[in-house]
Image 1 (spheres, rainbow, N blue to C red):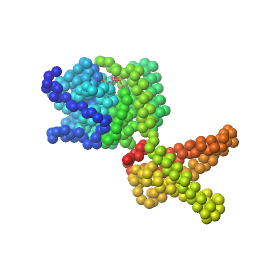
Image 2: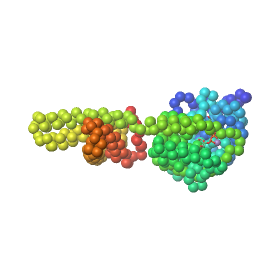
Image 3: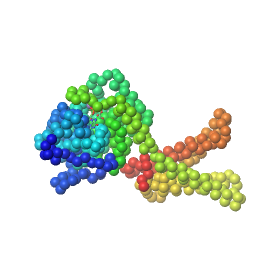
Image 4: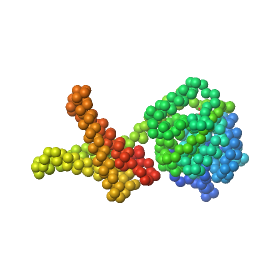
Length: 409
Ligand code: GDD
Ligand code: MN
């Protein structure tokens, strides 16, 4: 390869897979762009020229001079990257990244986005199986305000061309599995396996992405802050040139990916804090009960009710400043805090009812030891209280932020 081609290559980012919220500007001549489209390639030498030509033609019609195409090639043996470099004089908005130290589709896309200058980031396959014209509709949805605009095979106008029954079955099976493991993410996408989409930089900036394998869209939808998802139907075309890189390994990686996301999306830290606060409440309850009952000689029922209520107040305050502190800060004011306290109270009360029911059922109907029954009831009610308080008491109703996963700090 000539030295001039080598100089044209875009340096590949290293380190964490995080996209910055600011557009990546390296020289004074650079400027932010509206759109950066990544074309990941591995042995796509036969397709690269055609896809670049078509995409350039389309984008020149809608956002001339305000976009870039970035080919991210994993050092293909067929020298796709070199062929791509040769197109740069004709298509100056084209950039080429040749990765030599990493491999894999998802990370190729993220590395491309990290080097990108666009406010909107996109991805399309190089093999022309994704019809390029759909790009205009995808862009239209972004212009209307969508954070994520996905080309889908499973909405009106979408489909697959000549897939065997087995492949259709595997594809649907993978989607069902995704729904079971990660319903809140997969349930929002009619085609979670799509590799043809656009996302606003702001929606995924500063999130550490850690995809496994092929399915970058799932990663984006799971970790991004995305309210509006738009879908446009498309027909997945047959490959004319080159070969697919999909093997059984991608199915294994897909499952790994789902499981990893499941664990990182569950609010583990928050739940532990909630548990610690709950534990502190036990001592407050006992202490106040001792004060009222033994020291002041107040009646048993009144002492019990009062000490429980003080414990609930204690738990509320700690949860409000600590467990859900990041969420409370977005909803300041005494009135709002009081509302949260009332909801917290009601949920704890419902927990008490459930607790009593479980103990009774386990003991009377299943003859389980009273203390074991009580332990089971406490475990169930802790989850119940946690979940409903997270979703109802501290739920953010009037800000844009989505706090559902981990507390900040
Ligand atoms: N840089 C890089 N590194 N690119 C890769 C790699 C890799 O390791 N593996 C595949 N690609 C590129 C291919 O060159 C192609 O442009 C694109 O990624 C898709 O790869 P295919 O092998 O053609 O996948 P497919 O036809 O089965 O498509 C499926 O996966 C796509 C990507 O998620 C379908 O599910 C599509 O809907 C989906 O877009
Ligand atoms: Mn393909």
